[in-house]
Length: 211
Image (cartoon, rainbow, N blue to C red; front, top):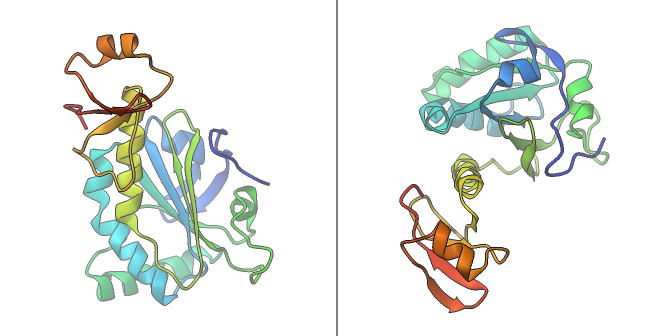
């Protein structure tokens, strides 16, 4: 199955370290970061899960839940989580899906055709409260993911959902945004009474108090 941005994230039922979940019910009204890792007891993913655990307060500030996935069974998840707590200084504090039958991996296209069919590639999905897929990232097995980038994108998506703006290259929370071209100057006067800087008619910079 090929998933595209803007589509509804497929629902599923799965066994996790937090019990059996129905994905859409578990997500509720939150944003969700769903990410997969090739196998348990792998070095790069050990560092990633520790970082995701450390960042849980940052995700919660953004009304976002984190859930991981591996094709290994629950008993291996439990042993690996002990290693993560020991080596990374942070205990895993979010559910981990045990996808032994690879149903979720295949549903979300996490099995790369050129890779070992028993392992997932490093994928990340950001899903909004309406269950729409808003971000997809795929990393090679040798490269650890950047969770600061995931947070940055969630910040951008939440800002641009509230306003008719886009965020420029390397944007960080608190920096100015760009008024989208579909908003006319007359409409912009109503939406952005604080005014804006127009470098070009199509490049209008605006400061937003809640950015």
